[in-house]
Image 1 (cartoon, rainbow, N blue to C red):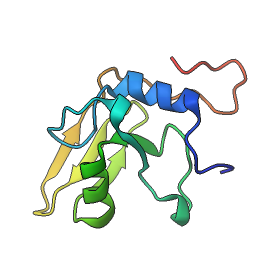
Image 2: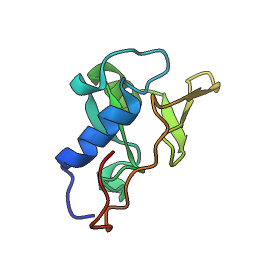
Image 3: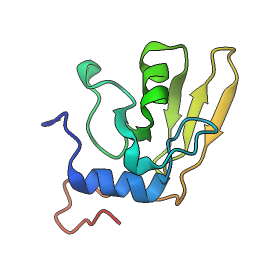
Length: 110
């Protein structure tokens, strides 16, 4: 945990893996999305591939201030959402990839 800002290599990885906003049913391109911390930075969440997803601004705000929440995120990018009515909705990454180890000097973002 050294930076809140998303490094360029991580942003590129998330865009390539996810392709779109990860909110259920949204098809806004990941390139124009915010990169959101699943567990907030203020609550100890890291800026890494295990704790970030692209969300368009509307869905970023719904997650942050609404009743939608991410209840699980798998290493391959699968995300489990909980809707306000309690339903669980699973979204899949465009390409299921595990993020590179941030401590591995030979790791590449793709």
